[in-house]
Image (cartoon, rainbow, N blue to C red; front, side, top):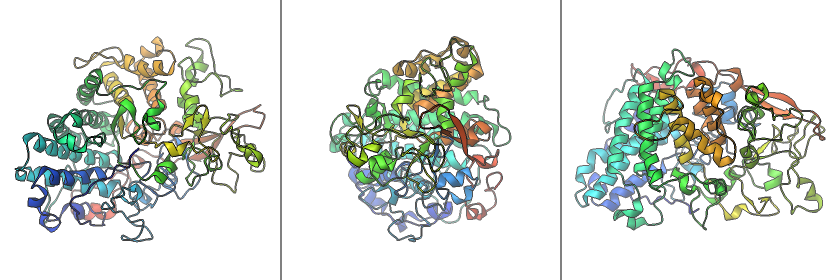
Length: 631
């Protein structure tokens, strides 16, 4: 993958503070000359490119040691990392944590001008030196508003060029609001360049902000192209247009914005939460938005990758120096340097195999056991119930007869991982994850003195190269040929959200007027791709049970892609025991018994731990900006 170098034509001053007012209350004249910015399409697009640079890469935004799986799906055995703070309910540490993509070193020991300080002007696009999600989103909102306020100055451009500049600005204004809203909840919709003294009261509901963002997405859809390569202005950057926002990108995020606003947490507005209760009006709007991009799928603009080519979505680019993502690519942050990319790609595998400097994020047993089901298409719970046919799961042989996706994206005990390992390193050839006690652990399993290995009994490999049956290892440098990438949006995600919104509104078997696909048919697309049966008819007939199955399918397909923490919060289930308990799976070397072990019980109470708290000074600027509940 080519490093996506952002060509910054105009350098803006940066204000290194966390207050919303500090970012948004600047006279435009103090940092830019609008006449110069909008003197030509090239200059205006250069200004817009800075908004792309502010899109946070969750998986590569932080320190050398990534920590981006913040739900019940992953465990990092360093309690001082951001996931440890979240597990402990210490959400006030998030904005100051130097290892979190929310902050990204703003309060680091190096200070605001040190080597790890946020620096949007860094043209090598080294992600961990870019602003974090909070400050980057506020900067992006301001830049978008500057474009929208000054578009009439762009007279030395064609109408198509003016349209695409304005379309990108509307998209990013909505997108950056959504980035804040996913984690902090309802947030004022800033739709103008703020100058001098101002008051922006916090809205009463998440929905009212989402509807304002929806208006911007509608405008973006009208103005953006389907494909930059087909436009005259896109010819100037031919071959570098994949990451730029399009009509399809805007449709996808419009739908996501509406679905999140319709979800149980937002629908209850922090007062109550009922996990199967959605705002059906917003769900219908979301379905129609997703239908817009799914029609582009039918036209060949996007597509679901086949099972055989599925690795191209995550790490295996079909041609040298090309972006991964395949036909599923919709939108992502810009790439980092190769070292940072490789540290992300190896984060699910132990260091004694890959030999790189990266944190080991172990997938939890609870996440795998509750979501990655059986070859018959059933969850383990439903399979064991006996209500849906013969039982496949054998608790004494838990790694057998599983969903093919379980094997594709995990290393399990006994699997050969490094055939070329010889001599003293031959002990690493097979995954030895068995664990009885700290003195008798498999070589890839953590001991009390070792933080480089699995803490749970599993490793995950979704972005980890495997060619001709052999994984990358320090004995065979496969990874140097590829660049993995986690996308903010891909087509599988679109289908999953479409199915969720449609089922919440109209049920599993009714297609909307805007698109001829039912929720049941949408979910079966992924199951059929993996070679497992359709959803059982008795599950389809039970509305709540089908929603559970839909959510399980989402957990499997989007596993380890940093959606999980948002999902379990918006569904209003994060405080339930099933989602609070992080488990390991222990077993002796001969695998004659298997025991679940509690690693940590997460602190999560509703509604306190459903939203991040605003920094105290944010809520003290003026009356009318209340803190999130419980903080």
